[in-house]
Image 1: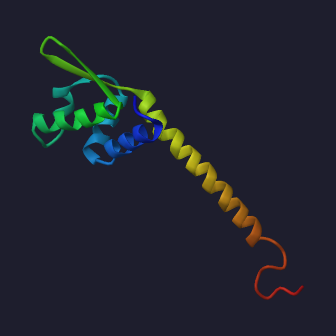
Image 2 (image 1 turned 30 degrees about the vertical axis):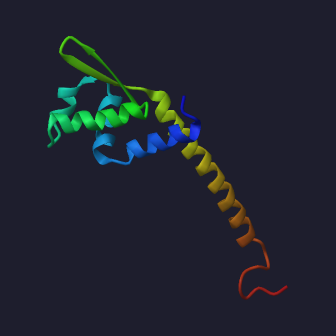
Image 3 (image 1 turned 45 degrees about the vertical axis):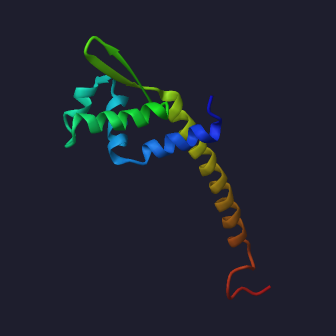
Length: 115
């Protein structure tokens, strides 16, 4: 099993590509076949499959084949991993900015003030 940092690396690496983000955006609306996912894209079906494999490796997408149709669906837990990490970073930076605002807003620290 991958550790948390490796899983997070895979998620962000997978989402670092515009085409893969478009595939995720489509799958958020519901499951779709590979051919449905490929239809609006200007690339070969093989290229779309490669993008989907990257998303599957990252755990963002799961697919299953029934007969001749491969259907893909989103796996929300992998996206939550990235969301939690980003939320933690946002909270930390908001705290730092609040403290900076407090320091900059202290009376007697601005130019031209007399103490």
